[in-house]
Length: 71
Image (tube, rainbow, N blue to C red; front, side, top):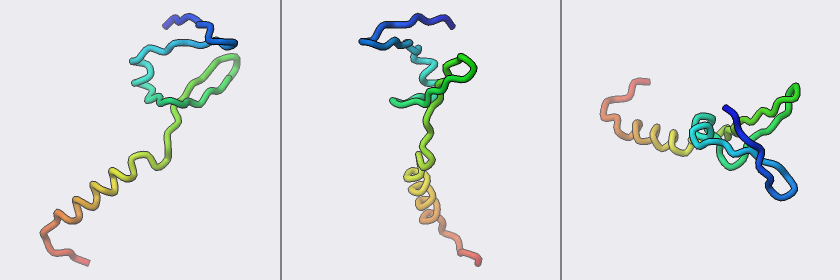
């Protein structure tokens, strides 16, 4: 895909298409690295992202169990 550099103040920027942002799971901050004269952008994944929801789901599944527990 070919894109153009855009002047932003004293810097330059590249506009990323919405489908690229969605596919790469980009949020408001990204990791940017330069490797062998190439710019590499990668998503920042928070290690504990989604834990609250998973714990809530697990608690619901435990309370929904009517059978007898075997230890």
